[in-house]
Image (cartoon, rainbow, N blue to C red; front, top):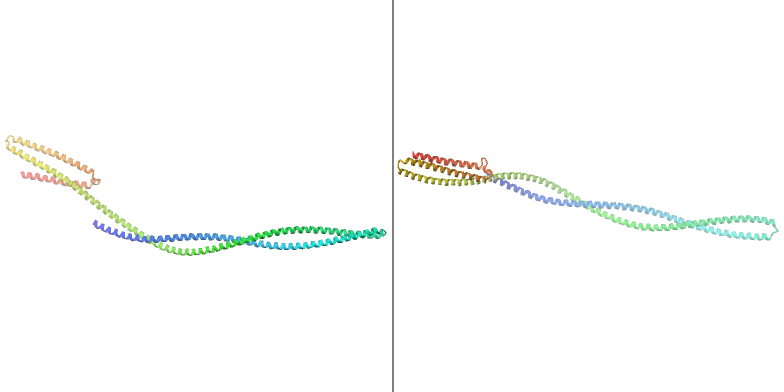
Length: 423
């Protein structure tokens, strides 16, 4: 029965091992798929990181582009305002140039008028000198001279007033001329400053144009980066679709793995139970074998002890036969002796027999004591299971008891036969 159980359990274990091997093969395939999924996941993570970096780069470039566009707009506004100011200044310069030309023309007119007035003044003074000379020469005509003098005085007063006016007008014209010269100088200075500013503005415009060209190149690069981002997004979407499909396959594989794990757990439980039962059966078999070995060993010990007892019994029987022979010799000697001494001799023989039996009993006691000590010494080297209640030691004692009963029954049979034979 135990061998059949072991064979059935071994067949079940073989079936379970085959199932485990198939599950291991499936798991290997699943591991390859999971590795492929991990590779695609790593690629997706890399592409996502590239996408994030590209988006951040595009965002930075867009920010820079927006900043450059704002700066360009500001510079354009400043340039437009500066151009308007330059046009205003050009208009002002033209108007000031016209004013300067008009002032110069007025100055020329005033100077010409001043020269004409001076000439007239000189002519009047000459006339006045002539009149004075004539008056000095013509002293007789005193009244006429007085009238003429009044007229001359009035003329001189008028001429002086005209001269004063001409002087004031010339002074004012000179002041206006100086003011106009100062204004011309200031205008020339402002024109120089404005020309310098115009040159600086032209250089700024050239630098701005170069920056605008750079910004256009950056915009073109940003557009190229945007195209790259679009390509990466398309690749990312395709990879996301692949990842989604792989995730579905992974979910299916995980469900299969869970089922396989459950089957493995069930198989492991069954295998564990079977192994436990096999271990129990093997332990029982080993225990039985150990018990059988112990029984064989005890039987061997018992046989050896029995052989020793038989040898001792043979020796004792040989001694007994020798004693019987001696007794027979003594009986023959007693028969030959006289009848008077027969009673004394019989008593001596009885005493000798009893003494021999006593000695034989003491010798047997010594042998029994030695044998019991021998057994005690042997039990000290045996395991504790041997001396427990109901263990192998009790079996040995029962076996010895049976042997003692057999030997005692043999002795009784022999004694009864002797008595019956003697009777």
